Amino acid sequence: MRGHEAIEEAPNGMPFAAPKSSLVWTSAATGGRYTMVRTIPRREWTRALDGFTQRNAGRRTSLEVDAPGIGTRSQERDFQLQGVVYDPKDERIEIMLGGFEGVGPHLTHTLGDIEAVDLVTDSTGRDTTLRIAQRSGQTLLRIEP
Image (cartoon, rainbow, N blue to C red; front, side):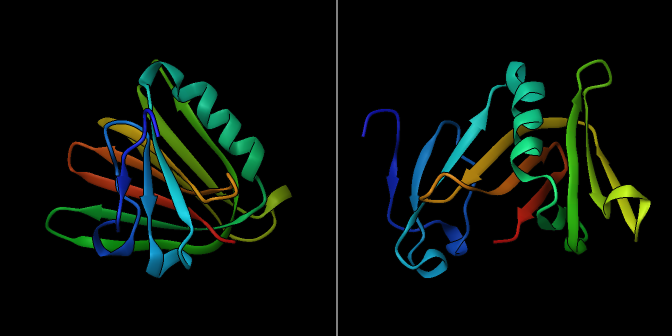
């Protein structure tokens, strides 16, 4: 497949960041289906995150932060996605989670020092993970099935 790199299995059975779009077989995690990892160019972050929000608003999520020295920490589980936005002036991404119309707990996670944004989709084209790589770690926003 032109423009794609086929890989037998992702490290630890999980999707991973790649410098370009990659076709990743994750047999254990997806029952033999593939996932697509696409690194989004910086100039497309605003539009891509707006589209991600439109496709996934209201879906249940889990948010994990992986940072040197503390390891991987779950920040939330089962909150609804309200939105993900990029502010090009401040070069920050905000992830907004919680109930709609001010009902229930809310969480806004702000990220700076961003180096890359990767979008993982399953074999049907449905978004599964948004990975935001920073100078000192990464944040994974997983969209629950």
